[in-house]
Length: 177
Image (spheres, rainbow, N blue to C red):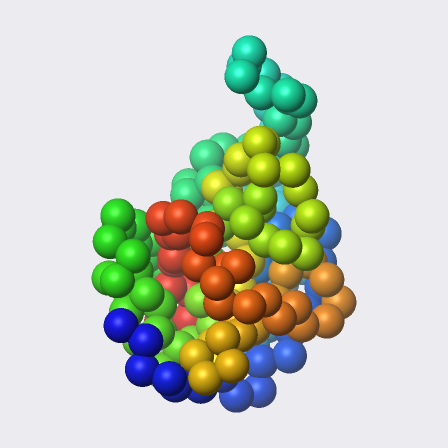
């Protein structure tokens, strides 16, 4: 499926933040010329909540503080500010990669939900999976096998394609449409 292309969204230079979902949306919106603080986005998404989730097979509990489900939170924000957003999910790796590349070809940074365990810059143990971590992918370089990521870091993160692709079944909302 790979065509040895290099696709980078020109002019994307939005990095840094506090919470993965509000950071991803803030950075994509800023790229599109809409400047909204993470605090405002948190409120628009549903505000603060609390979850303490523990199962016997988990080594440590999951603690979260954002209100609502992952998908609903992002869609609520977009709906409340009048931005068209869509979440696409597929079990087909080829279809997901094709749709992801099409958005990059259109010059759109892509908000993707991934499993944190597969992001090498977190250096997490392989046991506690969480597939709701939001990142922005604003480029891929299939020639050098790189993926260009905007996460909470104040600068770009480059992952090698093989590391990024290990994250199974990613979901992606198209935000800048």
